[in-house]
Amino acid sequence: MWSDLRTEIDQIRQRLELSEQDFTPLPFTTNWAKLEDNLYHAFCRLDHPTARPLWLWERFRPGAVVLVCDDEPRNHLTSFVNPEEVVWLVLNETVNMGDKFWFYQGTPRAIGRVLDECCYLDEIYLVSKKYAWLLCMNHHRVLFGIGSPMQERLLAGRAQHIT
Image 1 (cartoon, rainbow, N blue to C red):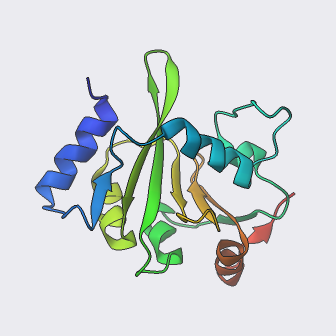
Image 2 (image 1 turned 180 degrees about the horizontal axis):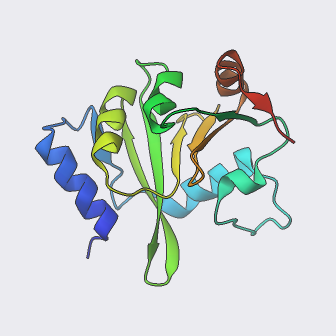
Image 3 (image 1 turned 120 degrees about the horizontal axis):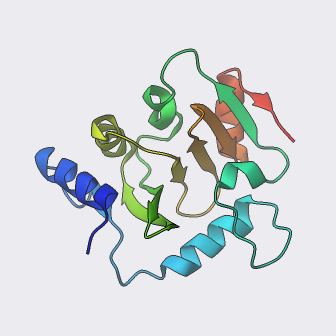
């Protein structure tokens, strides 16, 4: 059975008539655990190899940058991503008393259109499919970037380094 968030996003995708090339959920045959594991190891400081923080931004490796926006940060989220790059959208949702990451892939434009239509999102992650960078908007409406290309883009937008 689909979660509320996945149902909402699928309805939005259909309503916007987005092609699978522009936006699609990763198939259920995807090794979700491996993708999550790669995210943790590429971008987070882990106290233990099997540690899994609920919010990745609380455990980012040193060098991550933060950008606090005066207006809605979701409006800026996809503007930091190369418009030609197909990236992963990772969303978390509480499902059956636990947290679950849902993975999608798409173009920044299509992802932005979908996010504009969503009612409630806790954490939003955009990730390079090569794990070169990660961009996050947390539930405090703060943007985080890690990985040199994204760090540079956020710093150009007057972000600050965090440790």
